[in-house]
Image 1: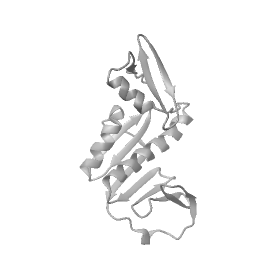
Image 2: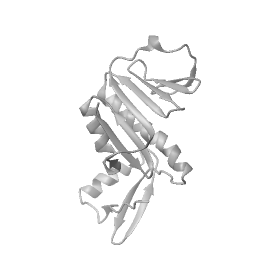
Image 3: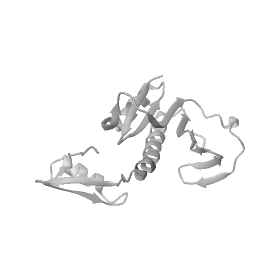
Image 4: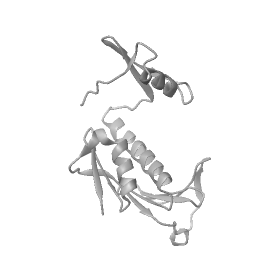
Length: 175
C-alpha cells in the first residue's frame, strides 16, 4: 500500500491508501512537509468503499454539525458524513480510518483531520496556527488576519495577478 510520510515541526504523520489519486492530492497539499520516513504521532488511512455502519457499536450522538455527526465510544470517535463517509478516530493510537466511495470527500476529511490533530500537538509545543494571508512589499511583511469570507483569497488572487505592489509572503522559516 502506498505510504506518504510528513514531518510537521517534529510531529510525524503517515498517510496510507491504495488510491494513488488520493495519495497524490495529500502529498500536494502538504508537499512542504514531505519526508522519507517519520515516527508518526498520527496515522491516517483511506479505503475507497461504502462505510459498513452495521459493524459499529451502538452509540448515541455526542455532537452534530451541518457537515457531520459524531459518536463517541470510549477511546473511539466515529464521524459520520450523513452516510457518504465514515471517519473512525482512535484517540489512544492516534489513528484515523476513513472509508468512503468519494475521493474528494476522503481528501477533505484527511486534510482536516491532519490539521486538527496537528494543531493540538503543535500547540503543546507552543507553535500556534493562524488563519491569514501573508504579504510583503519591499523588505517588510505582514500577516492579514480576517475571518472566513473576509477577502483573503480575493487579495491573494489580486496579488498573483500583479495588480498591486505587494507580493505573497515567500519566506518560510523552519523551526
